[in-house]
Image (tube, rainbow, N blue to C red; front, side, top):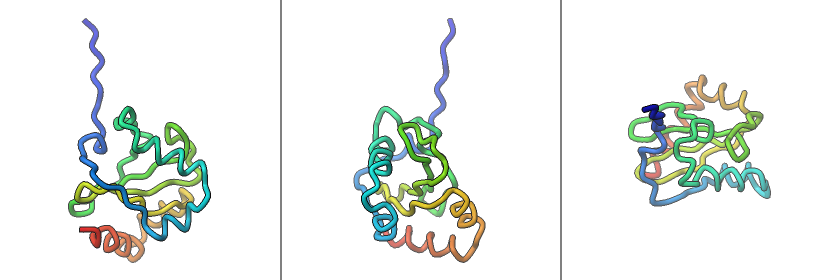
Length: 122
């Protein structure tokens, strides 16, 4: 008997009751159809185990930080949607170029600003 074992993603284990878009995110994504389509895919219950759509970055206290490339499977990597799940809220945080995001993760000051922003949704 050959049973395929499906690995559960961090995202699939979280409960989401509310969706929030930060002002910064709204500004960065205004009128971008590709972003809207990708947001729908991120929220698609059939794709909660997609490691491309829900690329886990790190845990910040009780918040789980993710990123996704654009597209149905999160494969387009030039720009990424950065979001987190905190207190059962999915919070869309930023829409930035992938290289900018890597710099953001490695810059302590910038990361602290993001952390404060996330924790303000408690």
